[in-house]
Structure formats: C-alpha cells, structure tokens
Image (cartoon, rainbow, N blue to C red; front, side):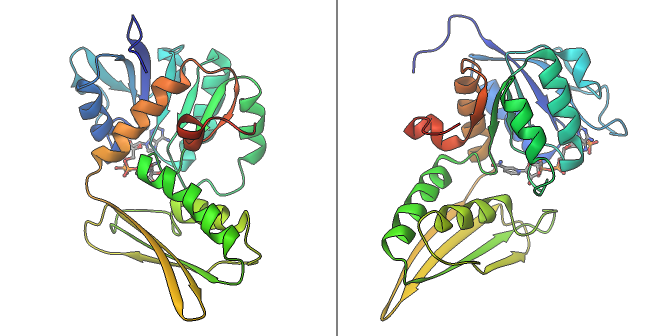
Length: 248
Ligand SMILES: NC(=O)c1ccc[n+]([C@@H]2O[C@H](COP(=O)([O-])OP(=O)(O)OC[C@H]3O[C@@H](n4cnc5c(N)ncnc54)[C@H](OP(=O)(O)O)[C@@H]3O)[C@@H](O)[C@H]2O)c1
C-alpha cells in the first residue's frame, strides 16, 4: 500500500485511556496520520491536557469533525454518541470499543448505510487471521467439541471479551454447536490471551493468540483506519482489509 500524498486527518475517542495512549504513540511513528481531535469523557481529569504537539483533549466530538477517519477506543456508553456524530459529519468510523452487546445492531446497520463503519473487537492482525482459521477448522471438524478460554487484565470491564465472542461466531459459521463454552479469567496485567480448542476422539486441535504488547492493537487499528478512510459507506471488519470484502 503506498502512502497517501497528504496525511489522513484522524480523531481519537478515548485519548486518555490505555489504548488511546498506545494509539498516540503508534501514530507518532506514522506520518500518514494527522490527529485533529482527541476526545475523553465530559468528566475526564485529562480534559485540556496536551497529548501530542498542539493536540489537547476535549469532550466534544462533533466540534472536531469532520475528519477523514474517527478511531474510538473508549467505553460502550459513548458508542451511540460517536455513531451519531460520525453520521452527521459523514466521517468514517473504526469502532474498537467492545462491550455494547446486541443493543446497537440497528444503529450499526443505519450508520453503515451512510459512512464506512469498521467494527473491530480485536485490531490485531494475528487475531484477524485466527478468526479465519477458526471458521475453516471448525467447519471441517463438525463433530469436534469447541471451547474457548480468554484471559485479560483485571481492568477489563466486559466478559466474555469481544474477541472471544467473535471467535465463537467464527466457529459457528460451519459448526453445528448451538453454544460454545467460553471461560473468562481476569488476572494481573495480562494484555489478552485467547485459546480455541477443538476436541475430537483421540485429539485436540488448539489455536492460541497471545498479545505481548498493547501497541499491537494500536498498530493494527491505525493500519485499518488508513484503509477505511478511502472506502465507500458500508459495514466492514478487520478481515476485509486482509482478505477482501465478501459481504456488506
Ligand atoms: N479492538 C481492540 O483490539 C481492543 C483492544 C484493547 C481494548 N479494546 C477496547 O477498547 C476500549 C478501551 O479500552 P482501554 O483499555 O483503553 O480503556 P481505558 O483505559 O479505561 O480508557 C477508556 C477511555 O475512554 C474514555 N471515555 C470513557 N467514557 C467516555 C465517554 N462517554 N465519551 C468519551 N470518552 C470516554 C476515557 O476517558 P476518561 O476516563 O479520561 O474520561 C478513556 O480515555 C474498551 O472497550 C476495550 O475493551 C479493544
């Protein structure tokens, strides 16, 4: 992919958080990205602080739009507002925030008719490939018993993780299991670990992804955001960047 002639203007929602800081650090190494807004909650202790040269945290997303892409790694309670403001400004949105449940499905569908919307419960390129492998393996082994285990740091709010749910959905694509057990553990500073096992008679096939560094998600998110900025309206997933879009 060749670099665009001019940097892509980007807004970061959740700029004061763990992922926000990782994105700002990753963005500093990518001249193709120019931050034009950094957003936190209206009660954030970080409001007004300078997080990059000339970039101060504010709470009003609409005021810093339009941008060529918005990247949201914040809190599920912010998602409705982010969707509304991105739609109003016709700005593409990469939604990395997890934990919304199924309640926003109609909002996602409506937004995707108007803007490019990439919903990414996990922006790791390795996990993106894992989801494809999971669908392939589970479809070929329908009699095997599928199970998922995920481990994250104690600060993670949602359980099961968005990635574990995406993994279960990938398995179900070709597998008859009505429900797939997901074991969630919260301990220490674990950034994120997911394991899918397919247990059959006399064998266990297992896939493990272990995140070693939060920057991994940030680098994947920036790559996807740059890709999304030039897509037409529609609903996208990380896989579409790597494997091409096969459905809307
Ligand atoms: N897709 C992926 O690959 C991936 C990877 C890791 C994490 N995540 C998800 O990303 C999200 C953030 O994770 P994190 O670890 O960075 O969390 P975090 O450290 O708790 O940071 C949350 C950020 O969201 C902001 N925020 C909270 N409520 C908001 C609101 N109503 N409007 C605007 N901003 C708001 C916070 O601002 P203040 O607290 O300063 O107000 C803070 O900047 C979570 O949903 C997590 O599950 C996704």
